[in-house]
Length: 436
Image 1 (cartoon, rainbow, N blue to C red):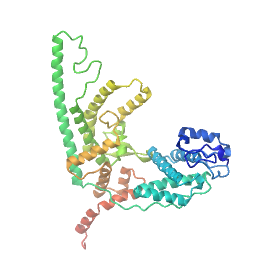
Image 2: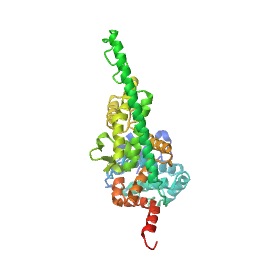
Image 3: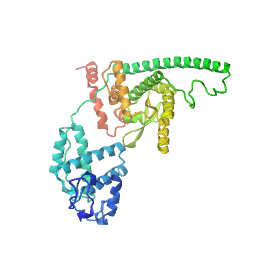
Image 4: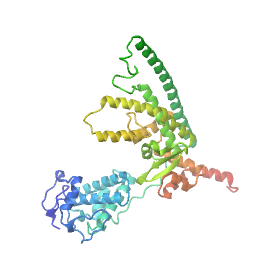
């Protein structure tokens, strides 16, 4: 292949022209045009289609490696149906590997050797956990396998790469008593916040009625065409800061109840839409990894907390955010983007303090705060998921039923939770077996 036909990409991976430097890197939106400009026998095959020509020359610039990465990611998304988060992770890990290979002096994608990849692993291992390195190696190995199968390189240098052996660690879980204390404390705070909100609403209503009466007696009813509690030009009353905090307490109680009751992931929690919840059946439709959906049941305490949030807390936050949005709206912002964001907010079950869909960081903060206030060991949302699975198995649930509830693709993943309740198994053995 004539390397002069290939525009140079990353520094160090340029062709014979010798051009290098980050400024010459081809933007992702232009990489397809680069491939279309190449002669047909030199183009990288489209995702999902094997090359029908001879293997491409191994003397390729990194512009072609970038194009190969784009083709690989498209193949993973379209042909294998991987989620957007997995695609993003693959892109980040493989790009970091290619950058490291460049810094080692590798000049072409086809020149990469097993020793080069081992040197990259050695340089990364000191700064990353074994689990992170295993993920990176799997991504890089899949990329080079794809390139070899599709004729982009002559052979696969990553074929014999092995992932590090991961330690068999048991997930951190709460005891049933600790989980109950955490849920009860959250519910108690939410109930107190609701009582305060109701009292303040009654006080506001009385004050507004008296003020309206004074306006009427002064003959100013025409000028006060709207409720006096509403600001000029507005349609939504301002929610005081203390009421906003009370609404957040109700929301946080619903978050911890739902996470523990269902065992769903935090990403699944924040992506819940109102239409996904069926209170009559006490079930919710959850979209998990790989965009796979499943139906998960939840109990009466979670139903009460969730209903209270939707009936009282959520409208308060939405009203507060609506007023703030009206006052600070940028007329230059894209109308379609505003419309899409408004639709997403309208559908979302959980909202942040500013009225948008709740993000994962805010959900994690709510769980950590609830654990601290209940005086139980600090836990994350994933620890609540572990706790729910462990308590289900300890209570006699079938392993495959728990697998379906959690959305595990492999039963081996669910089997981890059987080891957590080994103490209970020993106690039952000593009590029940005559020769214990």
